[in-house]
Image 1 (cartoon, rainbow, N blue to C red):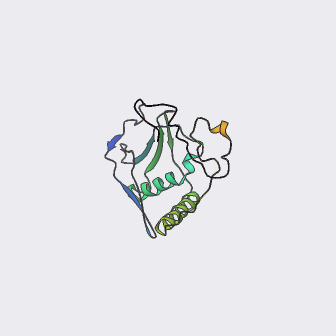
Image 2 (image 1 turned 90 degrees about the vertical axis):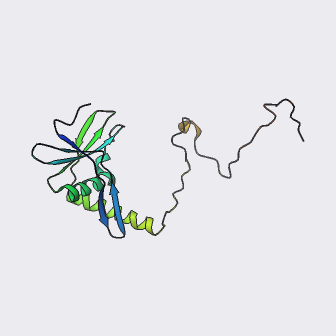
Image 3 (image 1 turned 135 degrees about the horizontal axis):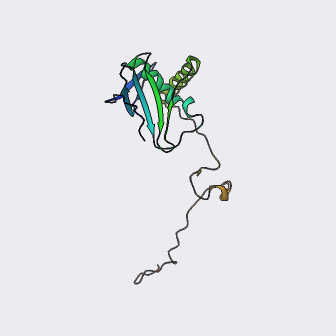
Length: 158
């Protein structure tokens, strides 16, 4: 997939966003500069693009860091290799501020060691039998080890 369009590749540098109580550090996948000197920061992912992915806090942090590091005329792109797409990331000031506040709140929670439990009755969504099992039964789960199923020669049972 060729998507650089004749732009010059720069060494990606870590970018930071200072927030009350700490900072968020983002690492771009690629940084390009065009002939006019405009910088384009790229976030490259191997999977497919999700429909609302650009609205996530991740891209808002990349957008804020890109502007802070490379100036207001810089651009941000999301590259997805599986579906071979390059999508410009453009977020409204309202969305950027909302996501910045969300990140600030998360940072404050981490610093205060607030990790509220979110119990889930179906904790194994990646299991191939996920849709067959149903909810877990109440009570404690335990594993049975069947020693007698595979006898070992010379072994004795006490």
